[in-house]
Image 1 (cartoon, rainbow over the protein chains, first blue to last red):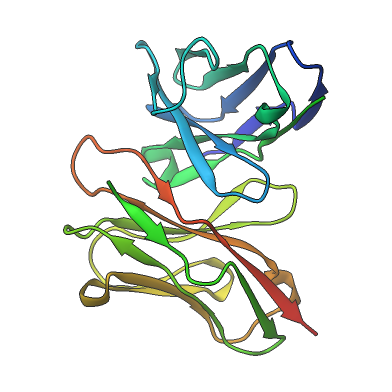
Image 2: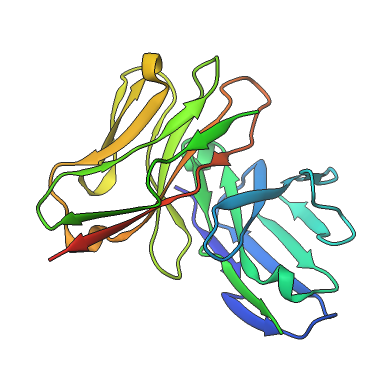
Amino acid sequence: SAVISQKPSRDICQRGTSLTIQCQVDSQVTMMFWYRQQPGQSLTLIATANQGSEATYESGFVIDKFPISRPNLTFSTLTVSNMSPEDSSIYLCSVEGRATNYGYTFGSGTRLTVV
Amino acid sequence: AQSVTQLGSHVSVSEGALVLLRCNYSSSVPPYLFWYVQYPNQGLQLLLKYTTGATLVKGINGFEAEFKKSETSFHLTKPSAHMSDAAEYFCAVKDSGAGSYQLTFGKGTKLSVIP
């Protein structure tokens, strides 16, 4: 199954700044997803990122706040912009496709604290 | 829209006892169903999934789940709990239709194993 490397694993950031999270997959995958897991909560889908097209955002998430890049079939980035303490969460990337036997494989997550 | 209900946010079992974690979904069409486990400070690991075929699905670490269409349920079981099973467990569903990629997660059940 596909292996995902997500960086950074954790960070503490000042409010008003931005953080870019990287997701690298060891296989080519069509579908990549970004999720947010707020403290003590379940996972919420932020957006779906397909290579060669604009990301599709879920209700409540906008591109200005969470810009996403997907330059090729093995890599994506999520930026959390103009951060506030409410953005403190775990952010996870996920992939799905033949490389994952059509299950969804998740990265280990980025634990973000905004102070 | 899909919804997933996990009964019990926290379940405690004794080591060696049966583990039963409940999951019910709302869908008129049988979806694809998943169970994930999240250990502290880690990402999500796929335990098992149901797409089509046999309704009793065996996964990793001795876990299994049975899809019951009439009950719209996909409960997770393990005959004998180990200390290493202590973690948070998430049930997730995906529409089985073509072009549908979004996973909808339940709120999670935290499993404690008592020595």
